[in-house]
Image (tube, rainbow, N blue to C red; front, side):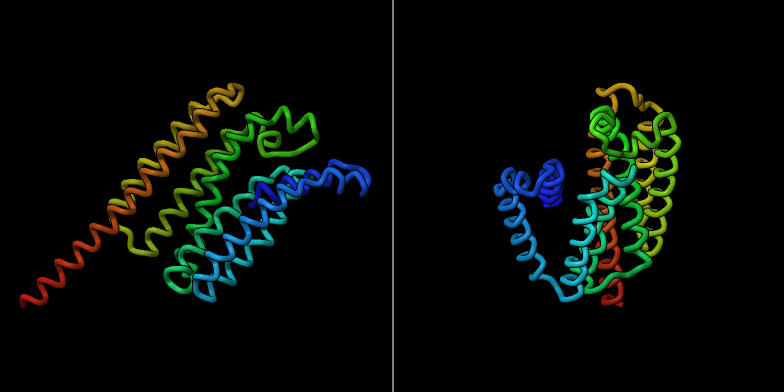
Length: 238
């Protein structure tokens, strides 16, 4: 949906006259975007009223991101403010509202983590972006990229730890954070921002660590349910 919006705006911006704009306007992209919006609306309307309002609010971020590459070196931040909205929406869909002590650290952690991925990925297209006058974080950070990535990583781990404390996570969760932190440290230390093959490998490696973190959270929930069931059985036996 975001990609479709971005494509339409780019098509309009690249044409100088209004007549040329509409002549080259991509109605197939418009149809694709409207189709996605319709499906998203259908899913959203199945949720509670709080979540419907929260989901609708994300449209403002979606539209804003479409313009960011032309006015700031932080377009990826606008993108991740949009994409990680799911951390808030997912919680409210299950609980009926957002718990700020959990949702805000989780949302912030998601933004910081994906900024790491996006900064690495931005190096792949930095030459093309510079040639056509677009901006991204790779062009801003340049040789200081690793320092920024290190700061983002510390923010991720701190926010995830805070979210874990707020919702009483078990040792399984914190063990996953240690693995996650080690992965980030190795990724940043070995990153070669001048090697397209290397930063592509680093970018895709985040899929694996995401799966590890997810599985650890699932194990935590299973372990907690087992403990709860055992406590109930002991209470009933008494």
